[in-house]
Image (tube, rainbow, N blue to C red; front, side, top):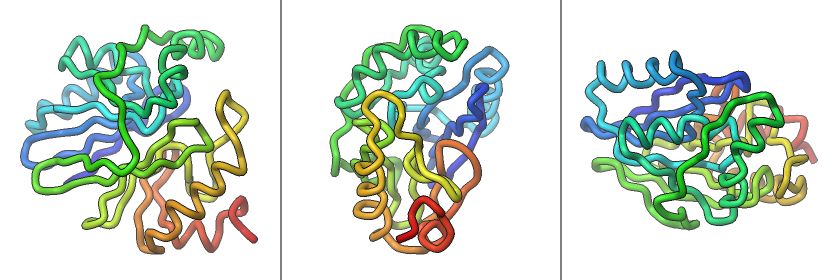
Length: 211
C-alpha cells in the first residue's frame, strides 16, 4: 500500500490517496477549486489509479470540500462515522462562516464503524475511534506497514483544536494516549495538516502531551 499526499485549500489540508495494484482510496478530499481537482485527477490518470472508495476521518469543512466533485467525477460517496453526520450536513454553512464556498456534500454511502477493516488489495487498515477534535473522528491504521492517517487528532508538535462543535480537550487527549500511543513509537503519522511525524517523536516532544 502506497501513500500519496496532496495539500489543498486555504486551510492547507492534507488529502491522501492510498493505492495498491491500480486501486485507490481517497481520504479527506480537500480539493476546493478546479485547479486542485485537476491536480488530483491528473495524478490518478497518470498513475493509473482507479478510486473506489472515499473515506473521511471526520467531516469538518476543510476535509470535505471535494466530496461533491468526486461524486460527479467518479461516482464516489463519502463514508463517515455516524457521530459526524451533523457536521457533514452543515459543511456548506460552516464554509460560509470561513468565507469558503462548499458545495452541498452528498449523503454518506454508509457509516464507518470502530474496529472495522478497510481492505485495499492484499493490505488492510484498521479503523480506530479517536473522538475529541470531532465527535465521530476516526483514524486509519496499517499494522503491517506501521503507519496511520490521523486526521486532525495528532500533528507534529501539536494536537487538534477542540473549540468547534462537538470538540472536547479531555476526550482528545484520552484518544491519543489510549488509542494511538499504545500502537508503538515507530508508527508513522500522516496528519490532516502539516508534516509527517511518529508516535515516539510526539511522546517525547509534543508540548500538549507532556505529563
